[in-house]
Length: 304
Image 1 (cartoon, rainbow, N blue to C red):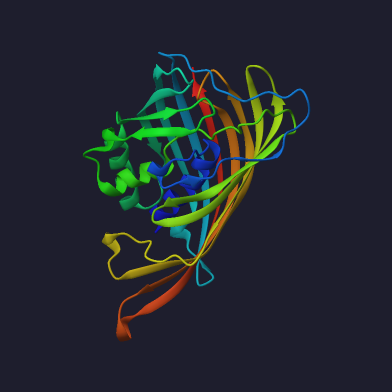
Image 2: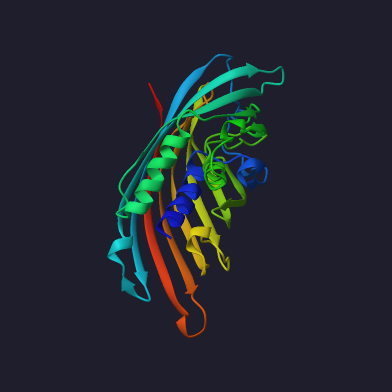
């Protein structure tokens, strides 16, 4: 259950800060950004300027502080701090006449802190070893919308690991079509699937600063889900888990440079999940409620 919770909430935050596109491959359907306010004059269109052969490495650091109760009683074994680090090497392999580009992304490293659960720690270490060197690709337009995706590099990985990575893989949030200025606001809202749980999510962006070279965006994140069952995997046969409530709120900043796909971003998020768990049959059956509270801090930045 701890692994499921970590994976779920990490995917929500990573998708928000690294920025989701309309990426069907990741179980995400994000509608076209809705411009709420175009901002002050002067205004300009926000567009990436891809250069064939350009390379860069993106790093992500995440810290999650968890507190868990079972029927109101604190569970020390399911509490504590969990750290995650990851790196992606990115290469622009082709630039097309319409301004879009094909970008390859290679997982070059994962680092997991100890969770306090030896079984989970072993699984995370094995996952890190399996992912290192795996390459995927995307075709991205000059607004950052994902047009095509290839995940041939996932062949040979366990299905559950493939889905977990597709849930959280890095992609770029598309900019609005319209020209915008400082103070502009737009909203990208839709749904994502993580560990089998459909999550409704909204990310509001506000232009805090703007130049010919890039922009600084303030982001506000909200997400929620409820009434979803069968979240546990096959290794926990006979157990049914239902999410009664999931609420995620948070925010941060994203610094975008138009000549690179790698942002510099920071966000912190509060998440609360309430679950009902049932197990066993007849006289041997039992049920209990679990509440998890989590505070997550995440940074994304280019590696020089």
